[in-house]
Figure 1 (cartoon, rainbow, N blue to C red):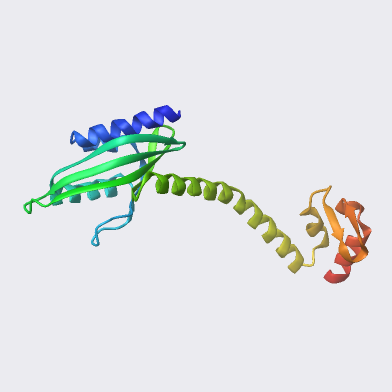
Figure 2 (tube, rainbow, N blue to C red):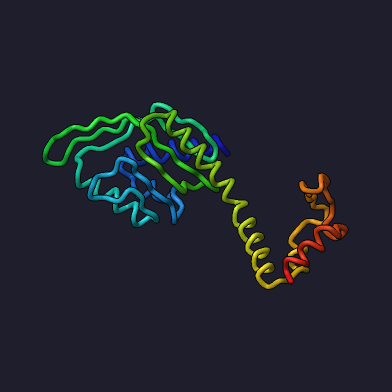
Length: 202
């Protein structure tokens, strides 16, 4: 799948340089996110969806007579592909040339590009950024469950519902009673914990 991702991004770049922008859009997820870290002052940094991305590209074609990207390297950082890129173009009417070297990153899922981030200063920065993004997403995947569990526990405490509180803990939970210099395992068989909670909830 990783090599397939690289080939999809390679194909997207070739189609874009050939001016076949609608074919490029067909490689994107309908809700794809496009982020340009070096966006112009009058454009948004992040847009979402095919229509919004098409609009960004149309602004580029208005601003430049010639515009393209030469990719020197495609780096697999699954599920991302990081590209070492040289963007070049000539301003519409002004003839002003642009020549930029940067790193761009493409995230893929199920054979579609779901996120594009342009204009990292270099490949190392891009790889570091997408690695941190993946780590954050992994952490976020468990956070809602923890938030929900703590929320249920606090609600039960507000209701003084001792049984609901005890059901929030695993049957083999271990409790450290520091003041007593001992520990208890299993909330159902822990009279010390039960008595203390029951007294606090009265």
